[in-house]
Amino acid sequence: MEMLIDNYDIEVSTPACDLESPVFMAKVALSVDISGVLPYVNAAVEKGEFLPDVPVLVWKEDSRKYALRSHEIAVSNIADRDEAGDVVATLVAKLNTIWADRDNLEPSYATWEKPKVLEVFKLLPRTNCGQCGVPTCMAYAAKLADGKKSLEDCPAMCDPDCAEKLDALRSMGL
Image (cartoon, rainbow, N blue to C red):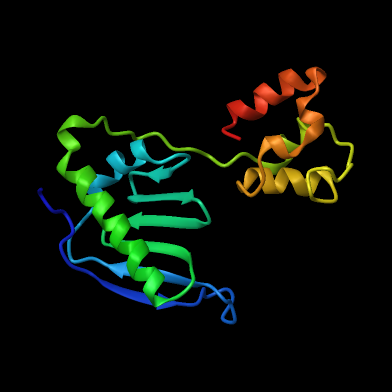
C-alpha cells in the first residue's frame, strides 16, 4: 500500500480555552503535505466543513472533532496519551487507505455549513416543553445545530402536523 503518512509525533495538551479540562487534544505535526487527500476524506465523512483554499477539513465523529490541515492533524476530546495514540493511529491508517485507493474514489469539494440556530428554532414547535431534555426550544435548537441532539429527541416533531418542518430540518443536515 502506498503510504501518505509513515511517521509522526503526537503532542497531547489541554484545550487552550480550558486549562483545567479533564479531556485533552492531540496534535500531530506532519513532515508531508496531506492536502491532496482532503477532498477524498471529505467524501468519506459526514458533515465535513471543507475549505479547499486554506486547505482545512473539519468534522465531528462520535464525541470527537477532527481537523486536517496541510501539515497537521488535530483531534479533540481525548482521555489520555494512550487513547491519543490509538485514535491518531486509527485516523492515520484511514488516511493512508484513502490515499492508496484515491484512483477508485470520487473526491468531494463540497462543504457542509452548520445551520444557524435561529433558522432551526423557527422550524421547531416552540412549546418549551422540555421533553427533549433541555429546558427551551432555543436551547434545543442550539444543541441540534451543534450535533449534540437529534430530531428524534423532540416528541412534538413526530406529529404529522410537523412533517413539513421536519423535512426542512432534515434538508439542513440535522
